[in-house]
View 1 (spheres, rainbow, N blue to C red):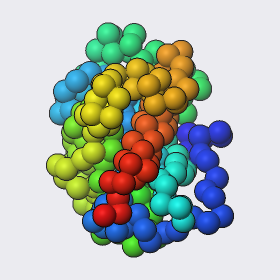
View 2: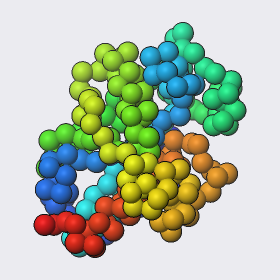
View 3: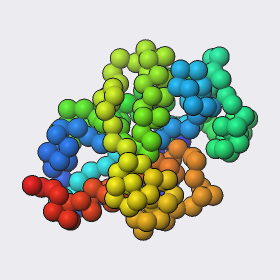
Length: 219
């Protein structure tokens, strides 16, 4: 499910690949969403992962770029709660999943992120997520489980759009925050890694751009 159709937006012709480095102290924000077999990052399966890249255009606005996403085979011995599958609607037996092993999914995601870090003149990626430490914990656990030594993300720092949207809009639930921000949100399509990651990316860009327009950056 890499670069799924309709998931990426074309960048404006006046996009810049350097300003984002200054904006976030040489950290590149990358939006991550995972769907899992439960809440325990050590024992529960990683079932979907999506990464959304962002760039800054010449006007200083943050814009959504490409999406890299995979369905993932549960690792050997992984716990999968039925309640988690009921919540996400994931059908592990579906012929449409086209799932790959954890190692392949993470290697592809990490490579795309490292390439973008370099292209944007940044030093490292920082994870952006809605309740971000949940996604970061699963990403880190899967990386360690597969002995991947080149994890491009900061190991514990992140941007959490739940907190940011609570500050900006008085809403902490993703659907409610998007509604307050004027971002279309479909509960029918929610709880897939691609959809949630792209909506989280739109929300993050909206908050960052709103802060800029209010005079918060550049100082």
